[in-house]
Length: 334
Image 1 (cartoon, rainbow, N blue to C red):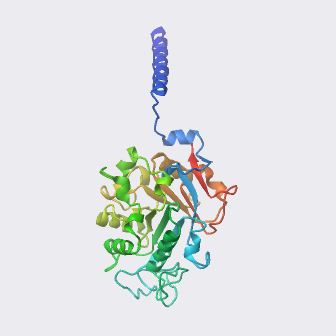
Image 2 (image 1 turned 30 degrees about the vertical axis):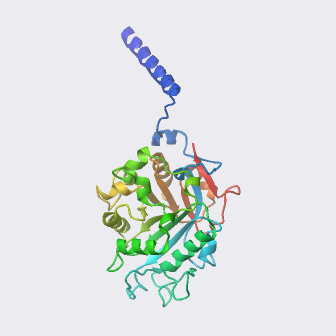
Image 3 (image 1 turned 135 degrees about the vertical axis):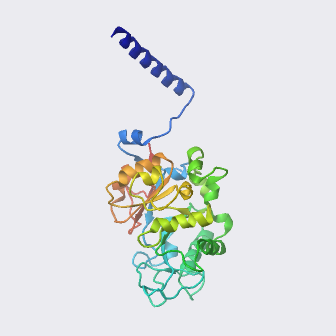
């Protein structure tokens, strides 16, 4: 018994010394899910331009291409820099109107006779499809040099089709958005073997370093198999122009292979799309934050302050003018 007590004291002494040594050396231990849980989630702190991209929480819009929520898509960017665009391959539920390299923008499966139903204007009055919405963003981008980073969430409502493959989508992006305006996945990946490996050791850029940039992310996809559509994008394009943000409802999507991804494509997943009112959204938000990944919450229209402890990056609301204590952007702490 006496030897056991001496052994216990020795272990405690070694632990204390190691802790002191770590502090003197300036060692910063990585955050873990358990440490975040013990701190009862996150807090919102004052935002500064030196805040890294993955440590920013902000109000985003949900379906703001819809006339129901905004008169003009261009004007939405005066309020929030994170916008969403739903897009279809076909005009309607009859699967009519497939055009190579063209996508329709609307919310419902059946829209106007044109296949489009949105508030985008673009550079002409001939069409209000996806290209027109992108042109509105580029026009705002050029009108406001040095702006805060713009995030465009593309919510795909159907599978990839002939003439509308991942390469065709990337070609449209390259045609409309200036190359030097994009912050691409490869910019984060660098020489790492995957994006997931990159974020383990490489910090995301500070917000000030992303001034004037545009970041693109893909959500949604084929009905009942949205993550498959995103995995197919990665398989075809690798680090193309889009980050992918699979539907996420369990920890294994974050720590392992997201549903419908595979051992190769999972390495390119560092964004996650979480539905509001999911019982696990707080748990998932904390886990994603601990990995230095990016999270987006969608659905519902709650008071922003309600999400402060959930460690989420983008909080997509129908009423994107809402704030928490007069603010729409914060640093995620601790």
